[in-house]
Length: 518
Image (cartoon, rainbow, N blue to C red; front, side, top):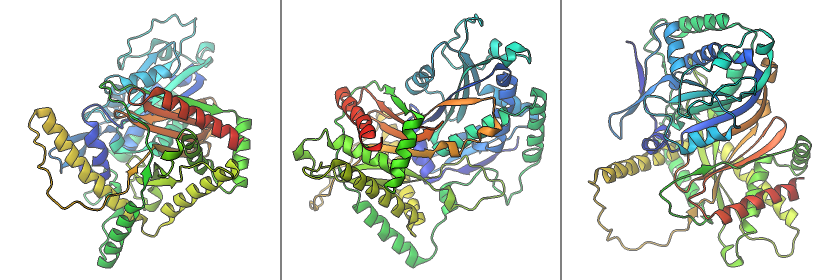
């Protein structure tokens, strides 16, 4: 059979290697929505899933690890349209559940790993049965068996009945990032929301296969999307390369953070995702207020976290600044290739550093907006730096080296062959400044600008929750506007932190939102 492969880049490797054991960083996107039952026939969903898997081959690829230096994506294109449908069906799970979407989060975040080297993506569609459905609750384990309720819906009155569904797409982080999940879900619902019959959608599968995979891909064209490392390339000019290295070292020296939540040691990780949405009228007030202050909601959320934590910090511990890490979407820095897919990892990393003290005399509101503008300045400086490409590439190389070392150590410890390195005999160097981040803050922006709601008027999206499987004592906060509302969520290992401390921080976050933004 024909196959295409390429090596993982440094950034991709830094996500793949830690995920091998328990799926750390495996991503998900959960959407709650209402739709006519006839729109959600398994046959229709399977066809749309098959089309998108052919457009974005990393979704249907596998990972083969030959060494720590040589890890590859391997893709076997479907041999026919029927093969594409069968493959899509094998990673499609229809369920009937009587609870809201929280059960899916519990299953994915805290149960056995769903994904693997052989399965880099997985799609779940869950239906909330009504009393008329009289269906037994199926097992909670993944299953690709058909849901008879959804499968048997017709164009009768019952098929037109609007009911609740959950969409849950899972993907390993080494093949992409959060913005690709958002774009994918928009494309999914745009195809599913069309008036096409199941037969017409399956004809679209056949057309897609003929266009993309019926014939071998020319050797001078990449069948798989290139890694961001390859897209960025290596600076060939020696002077510019040296300037980039100096810039990166200066960048690292400025990453000063001395605040962190106290952590607990617990062998059992359990991730929870408390999520809050603010009403549309309140969100409009927030957006108007941020605009008047010259900042975005994203910048304001950094200040929210800053004030929320400073208010719970004792005076003697406020001397060192607070650092939060974040990611930047770098797709705009790449030229678009002929066969390109947006399913590839395309993020750079940066930190926002803010003071951690509370003013004693000045207005706290004034301090809040000053820090929001400070966050905006730091974000803008990162995005507009003429050396951003070299900085992203240097960060990727550093992360790749670290991940290889840690993976080798983890494997040796698991095999009982690890030998700790001998103690260093170097002269003590000058003390380094602390560089620890309090929290990761991922701001997805205005998602209503991405979703093309007019393409699926019969499908009403109402709930959006992104995230990933956390490592022990992991924490990541999200902020975004969706369905006209501001949403904030906090995914964290509740066994890895003092619960009272996190509850106090989360309460302070909500209080700061209401105090400064409304």
